Length: 314
Image 1 (cartoon, rainbow, N blue to C red):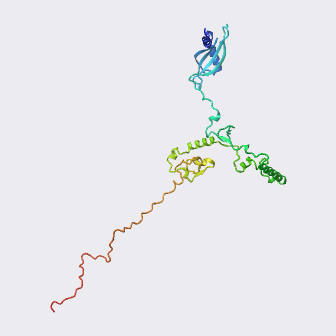
Image 2 (image 1 turned 135 degrees about the vertical axis):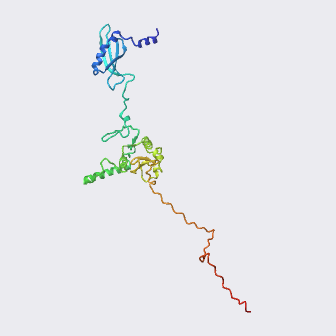
Image 3 (image 1 turned 60 degrees about the vertical axis):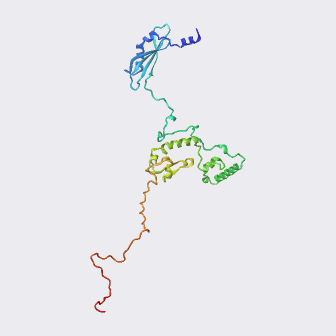
């Protein structure tokens, strides 16, 4: 006999023990003791777990547990005729109604879920952030910048001795340190957004208020020419700003410069009335203007005066 055949026979499930299979009443009594009254249904099957070990399955009628089964495992010792109880547990079946797979809170959190008093800690290795400054640029102990720092500390100590109320700078702040320079420039933050953080924020903002939205497609003009746009600071000002139009759909939101809406500042300007057409002067045709008013058609025009000739006299 080969080793493969021996291994297959060893892994084969043994035949269910007859006495354990017949212990249905013992298994039902154990299930009814663990469950509430009336929730243990019909016997739906039996499975052999090993030598003289079987599991009986009963239907669960408890509301909310559709497809679940009560599993009661019984066993019998070698050469013993009495079947004993092993364990009782409620297990899901193939068509059981199960809860969704557990997801960590950091992956379940969605925008808008935070409320007043909620804290959202960020991990130390968050890929959206990077150090705002490091100590790599600190001046060496014997450098000129370090000597200026020592002089500044001595002057600060002297001021503290003469008048403690005049001291406003913390004793740990050195004028020659990177942290002090960053503090004076208003940039002293432990971490800032990384390139990945900036890009993910830009993609998120462009999806909500970008050029591909239906509102922007029907807008008369883009936000880049709107007076209600407040530009951002930093590198994002090249593509985004904040809408300050209280009647607009994006008021108080970060919008793309290519976004637009019907509340554009220039769209609200009333059109000017059209100018009248200039007077047309015809210089190619001559108009006749009479010097005297025309007479009535029924009157006989007067004959011109002629000299009277006396035909009877010579």
